[in-house]
Image 1 (cartoon, rainbow, N blue to C red):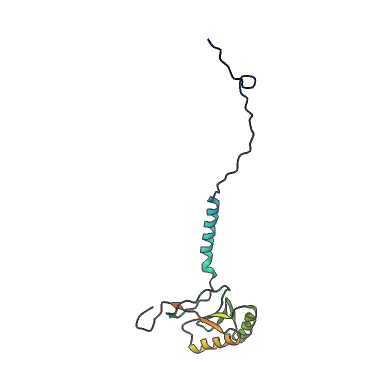
Image 2 (image 1 turned 180 degrees about the vertical axis):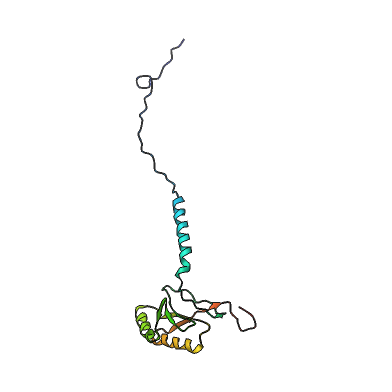
Length: 159
């Protein structure tokens, strides 16, 4: 009968393991739920605020078949001519006597000479041309007339 050899595990009979008190590991995945929540809140805020950002002068624009102008980097200067004949620069009503002087001051501060003229469709053509002359005298030579799309094309059909 043979004797068997027994392996020693270093003293004592039971193997003693060293317990490590490790800190919990950082998650390697990004939690996108808070990010999505913030984005949805911002989307709702912008959807509510965007209609309020347009110039608030009520003007009944004429309808044409012309295409829209390309969008510019600088916020466009908007001059509105309402049905009762009042002239408004952005949202500020301006007396006719001060129009050219105010336009010169604005033109000195702006890098672009582009201006958009919103005139009510009921305004006589002569009055629109007077305001365009004031815009030119004020330093604005690039004048865009704002209209609503979908008007007649003058070829027998509607646009």
